[in-house]
Image (cartoon, rainbow, N blue to C red):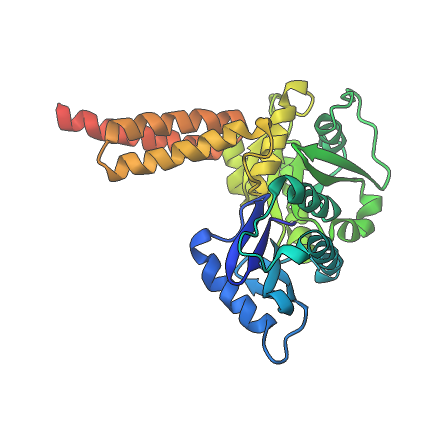
Length: 349
């Protein structure tokens, strides 16, 4: 997944566009210098890659103007897919700005460059895969995300379906795999190249035990992909609690009811949270932005000794987490709120 794009001219950052969490700004200068040292070395080439923790930095340079164009993506992204887009971007950038790069008053016009960059992201759009056995709600969830009619009767998916969805201005591939055992020889092939994998279960113990197979498959086929369990059919009496499912599966788990058409924003937010998407790309992601801001406020309140305020903020965060389907995190923040409140009560009694 293309997470960020940077343009550096004469060691000065002149443009940045973020689609998801990427390089920490405090580390950027240090990382960039390492990239530049490799790129402009005696044996350096016009294009190349530099791996930094969980990110792959793909670059293209223009020595005549000390220009570096830098794409930040995940480690699982293939450079052979990224390189053509780097070269295309450099060509378009120089066609528009090439004659102005050495002017003292040179500056980027975001209104011109942003659409070009967004098109690059569209060409490198992330792949989200929904896996799970037959009948757990994968196709229902896919149609929910696409705002199509919800099928109330299960119709098995044959081999798989691919759709393009939008979150704000960003485009994504959404893959829905057939869950019948006779297609298991295709699953690993289909899952390759995924930026995120959602394992859909029906929240019953029997299905959960069987579904652990997919965790092994994901770890083997796409070890760098973001992964979460979607505990579907939470409205049914036999459904296990989300926190119990998370302990059993050993992975982040979100509670869900796919047949409820009101849950489309919830699934969009789950995907955005999983991919660490920029919270500002769509109004649908406002609760995620609010949660992140409240977390910062709570941390500051703790540092300032404002424990009553921190307890209230933790409770608000817990409520937002419930809205987002993140039950385990909601319980964690609720426990923090209650612990602080109990401590304050004991001090005043």
